[in-house]
Amino acid sequence: MANHKFLSGLFNIAVVLLVLSSCTPIRPATNPLLDKKAFILASRARSLNQHIISSKGAGIARLQTKTRIDKFRLAWAAVFPDKIRITFLVYGQPMETIISTGKKITFVSHTGKHSKYSYNSKNPDLKEYIHVPLKISEIISILLGRLPVKKYNDAYFSPSDSSQSTIILTQSNKRGKQYLHFNAKKQIDGLKYSDSMGKYLYGMTVKKYKTYSFGNIPVKIEIKDKGNRKLTLEITNFQLNPVIKDSVFRLTDQG
Image 1 (tube, one colour):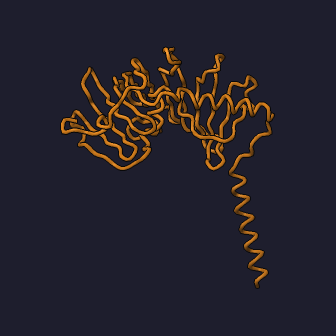
Image 2 (cartoon, rainbow, N blue to C red):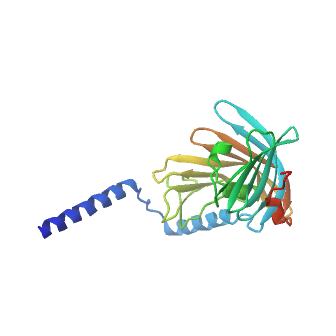
Image 3 (cartoon, one colour):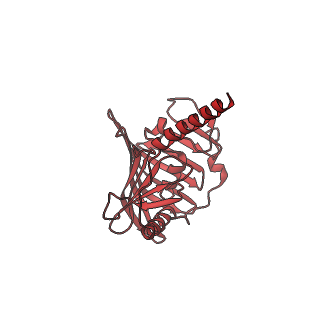
């Protein structure tokens, strides 16, 4: 009886391992020397503009779904890693303000569309509000002139891209993949996210870089999800590393 239970337990473990292995794609065999090159390029992409720890600026946001297109002006103040105040405006009039402190996020309607409300979250997903599945940390990264490349511990060139312009990034304790695409100048012009089986989730395309005295920043980025919903962010004014007081991220009675 004991042997039967032992064998039954081994069988159940084997079934679980078989299911898990069938759900996890096998990493392709790649050239270790090229893997080192891919890792270096990916590290440079992730470290882009890491010297920028705060910014103020203005820009344009364009939201496109299957049924409508909305265009807003925007103004923001952001501090790495988790603080931002961003206001969406139409014809110069504020419509909505979002404030995130790294502990709580608050939404304020300036038109009376909804009452002010807040909830606790370190890194909330904004899909419900901006239609594409971006987290607040990714918005902050973009508005600091960075690129929201997530953590990874493995990098290799895509075997299906002979030009070596696409790098695949994975993290051993995370499901999913990141795909970095480089242009001829070795600048990132695309960043895509997929699930562990390679199914597209959402991606970003850098449409334009701008050169400042401190370096280049992506000033026009298009974010698109698997439902073809798009958010285009365009930076038209950028202030590098301003001193931003914590009071900016606190609401007054006037908002």
